[in-house]
Amino acid sequence: MKCSKWKITCPLKNKNGFTLIELLITFTIFAISIAILFCGLRVGIRAWEKGEQDINNRQRYRIVLDLLKRQIKSAYPYYGKDEGEKFLIFNGKAKSLEFVSALSLQPDGARGLVYVKYAVQEDKTTDKENLAFSEDFKYLLTQDRKTDADFVSLLNNIIYFEIEYFGKTDENDSATWHDEWDAREIQALPEAVKLKLKTKHKTDQLTVIIPIMAEPQYEKSNKF
Image (tube, rainbow, N blue to C red):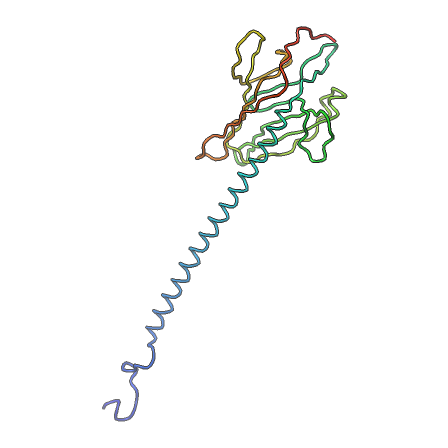
């Protein structure tokens, strides 16, 4: 019996529509294409967000380093007192620095000299370092280290941060770079400070050399 005799349309010979298998194949290809499209879109968005974050981080590093340069450059040869002896306030180590500056980093900071501390703090949760600072105006009046202000974070998630100091430890010596600088013993400020910063394992180290405008003192007497 032929299908045409009874005017019955055979599904296998219908040329005016799609079979179920053709529809399934079409929907499958469409779904795969949408999935690939959204996957590429997500990768693009993540790359864009990462790029934006890197740009923001670089801008933050640039701004913070510029502020540090200005404050260190404005280091002032201020003498403290301890039991009748005077000493120059500038104590620098590889991971910390304390000195007196004529510039405050705080927007609402008072004008005049300020006692400044930088400290590289370890973050045990990430195995990285954070650079923090504090400013204290009372210390210069009271000479009491207990009046130190709280530390404020400047830079986070640092791979590497160290400080070096350039100058002469004696008036007759040649200037060279040092890992530490104790002005209480040397009785002079360094001529320059070097900041070495690394934010990622695969990036090169960033080095900033900051000249100090104040002249070294090399005081012969430490009595008031």
